[in-house]
Image 1 (cartoon, protein in one colour):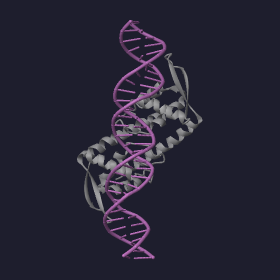
Image 2 (tube, each protein chain N blue to C red):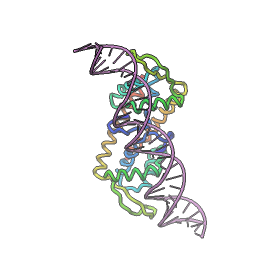
Image 3 (cartoon, rainbow over the protein chains, first blue to last red):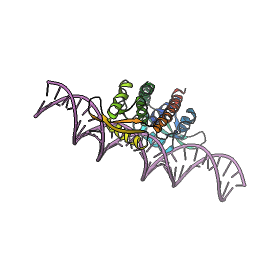
Image 4 (cartoon, chains in turn cyan, purple, orange, blue):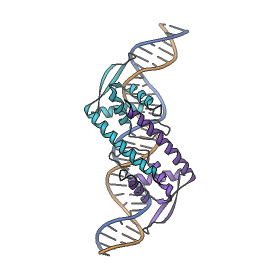
Length: 110
Length: 110
DNA sequence: TACACTCCCCTAGAATATCTATTAAAGCTT
DNA sequence: AAGCTTTAATAGATATTCTAGGGGAGTGTA
């Protein structure tokens, strides 16, 4: 994921995608746009990161894919969050909060 | 860095080490312990991650090493934050806050 | 018709960070 | 002498992401 320092926060892409899909099915391109917009253009998801990530998540059963047509009348693969995906989202959210708290503790040290 | 999900937050180790060294010179082993304790045992820095990271940071001029003796009277390599390291710490702290804010935005989305 | 542009998908190869697992040496304790 | 802790180091594996492309299909425009 592109940020100012490109390699920061490896490991959060799954979480962001899972969260993005809670509002309903979206195709890959839209997922990336959504994350970028919601993050005030700070997080930019490159396609070379996005699609492999979607495949991994599909293989793990967290999301399910179906071909359809986009708003712009183009063929697009829509991803839906599965029950397992919701569970995974809960777990990853908890981990994120836990680790965020831990890092904050270290950074706040006198 | 080991967390519940081992591969989470790749990219924050530099930041944590730099911050840990602001209190004064420490040897590698102590840096790892410090991070673990300050984080309430959530962040566990494996030695296989720590030492290569220290070398990278030394090469980049963010820290400087000097051999000495530890509290336990053992030979140890003490690392000191350089001026460039302080600058890097500022930058990485800012990036962390930026990205944390961005991720929070995405996670808070309705 | 031709052309450009955007949308949307996909992939190969490289770069990088971290982990696992192991070695090793030196001091302390028993 | 044996064993434990401390401290350093490295090789090899793994996983994620990036770079850098390719390509098709719809829409608009000259």
